[in-house]
Image (tube, rainbow over all chains, first blue to last red; front, side, top):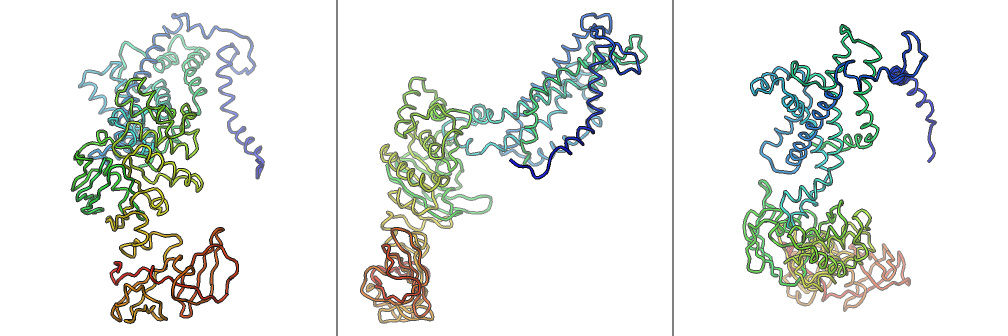
Amino acid sequence: MTRNFSAWPIYALLGILSAPLAVMYLFLVIDTFTNAPPGSLIPNEFTFHHWRFLWDASVTGDVWGPTATTFLFATTMVVIVLAVSSTAGYAISRLNLPFRRFFLSGIMVMHAFPSVTLIIGVFLVLQFAGLYNTLIGVILVKASLMLPFGVWIMKGFYDQVPWEIEMAGVQDGASRFTVWRRLILPQVTPGLLSLGIFAFIDGWSEFMLPRILAPSANFQVLSTYLNVVSDPNSTTYNFNLFKSVGLFYTLPILVLFAVFQNRLMNIFGGGTKG
Amino acid sequence: MQVTLKDFTKTFDDMTVIDKMNLTVEDGEMLALLGPSGCGKSTTLFAICGIHRINGGQIVFGTRDVSNVPSQKRNVGVVFQNYALYPHLTVSENIAFPLSVRGDDKAKIEREVRAIAELTHIEELLARRPAQLSGGQQQRVALARALVRKPDVLLLDEPLANLDAKLRLEMRSEIRRIQLETGITAILVTHDQVEAMSMCDRIAIMNKGEILQIATPTDMYRAPVNKFVAGFLGNPPIVMLEGKASGDGRFIVNGGAGLPLPSRLANTPGDTPLSLGVRPEHFGAAGASQVSGTITFVEPQGRETLFDVTLADGVVLRSIQPAREDVALGHKVAWPLDAEKLLAFDATGQAV
């Protein structure tokens, strides 16, 4: 293939523009392994000193507890989001629902709504249901806020499955449920996979909801844990330590992204026909 | 199994697409529903297999009224236009699906899939996925899947529309062969007259939600009931001339000279408005009367040559003849017209 124009000026421009970000990330990693004094850019030694929080609970408190909680938080949320989106998306895409248009526009509105504006209402509901200050409450809220996005994305994927396949399944004698489970669901697995990863990343990085809806609870997620570590007024404040915990917190997301980046792009190619 | 539609009515919202249609497909027969797009042929097909709910009338398989039976229990095999194979399953899993849904045991499924694969000549493809098959192979798989649980009726929705010309020819005879071998009652929906004529025992020609004529392909071609049917069948198409009877056994083209009428119409009173249909093979081969004109168009088709001949009064007749090169564009010719075979229609378009 021949090109009409050379690509290097674009690469150069993009390179220059992204250089500051790349440099900052590089130093984020370097700083966690060195003790370079402030103002110096040259690493002076190699040490695991800043990573001692992984095995020494006296540094910042136990880190594995919050990690497990965060994992539980994110995976539970993923399960809920996938279960509801895969069924609701199908219903909205295929079934002759009453108020279908109303549901669709409702989802669109919810999708566009900044979740902060809902926080007071959500707080009242949780308080009323007795779920305030509990992990399950935060999970439910996070999952529901994720649902409009999930349902909408899954609807887009279902819309792309030709209806003849469904009709063929029905003619072959299968019930609508069997058709959905054995014929349609396998064809939207790319959508489910990317939605799952997306939801997991979103849940993993959630800070606001646990902070507001479970401020005094007996559990911590990594984001609130990091918040405690980074408190400049605390006695344990240490910039390199903060960076190490931050990197530890980001690592799973980076790995997920590296492994599944092509899958994630899928979600935007999944189409969103109204 | 005999399939009967009694006063079948279908409406979409407020639009009545098909009003009180009656149709009987005999046991073991292959019937074509032929018509232009939008004539309601696919709607009829989908009503028979239960995808569309009917708004009136009855659908009867044999003696069983299936009007309100859900698709799953009708025991109808359908081949969709785009084949609708399940892309995530292999060919053998595709074919086995109807059986596994029914709960047959593994050994039986294996046996049935083998048998049907043999019938449709796809034994060596069983391990592949649909995406690895050519159009014709996908079609065979779709047929196999539709036939594997021995349905009462086989429905084919434009099965050849997505194939290229050569494959279309091949699959045409293959589908017919499979239908004859299994002896299944089949309904074929198509807008292609050649498909309908070459594959089916009888043709039901439809227009605007109505069946105009049901007949064998030959009868329908020779004796169409009206102008629409005459114009729909035949390639190259029939030439339709508007005019009136002269009263003495001839036909006067509007604003022009006369042509002979078939002798059965010799007594038509003068000034009766008529349309005269001249098929290309009626002109230039044999016949009692001579018609002369100038060749204004020549289309060699290999085995045959198609001519347009413009008569003195501007009327254009079409003629198809075994390939010949002795006449060329601009030549004056006098060719015979087989007046007895001409088709005539009255002012309302009905055959007379």
